Length: 242
Image (cartoon, rainbow, N blue to C red):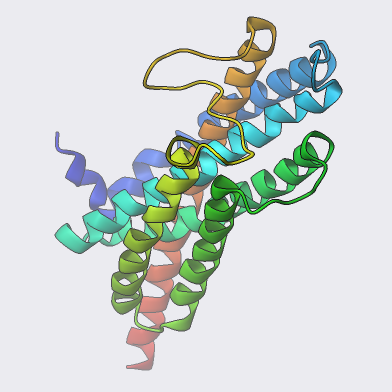
């Protein structure tokens, strides 16, 4: 069985439809347990007090905001190379979910930063690149809506996605490039496996991260199926007018 079989719209919908409720249910369960555990059953940090508990929203949201753009990048590249419409529609479907994650990360970051840094916002390299990524999300969604021909829109948004990936990378690794920024380093560096957080905070954080990831997956699968159906309706309407 080839993965490209799922580029068939009918195959994609029939395969993903029964999976979505399970993925969504598991994500909700993990988020309920992780957030409840993190906010109500973990101690205050000896430096940051109870403010540190916003980590259970901020870190997973920021992680998914960046990874959502990378998912859009992969889907866009598949569209440009293989011209599979499902991949273009999946990229389009991921954008609204990604921008909500980005907005959550920006808001929670400001709430966390104010008591820690004494300001709601600073032109820190990571914060600035993250804000630019948010603007790219807006531009990406606006470009899809502005162009009537779906293939042309997919082409142009794919190019925009490639360009915006620069800021997705900077959002992830800015603290490694510029040491003078206010933002702290990565709490759980994937490359080294080391972490600067105790187990009592780490376990619920991982649950929230996995929960956010599964929620993103469920929403993108649902939205992609919706985009496929909308494309079919548009094609039928065009035939009827013709």
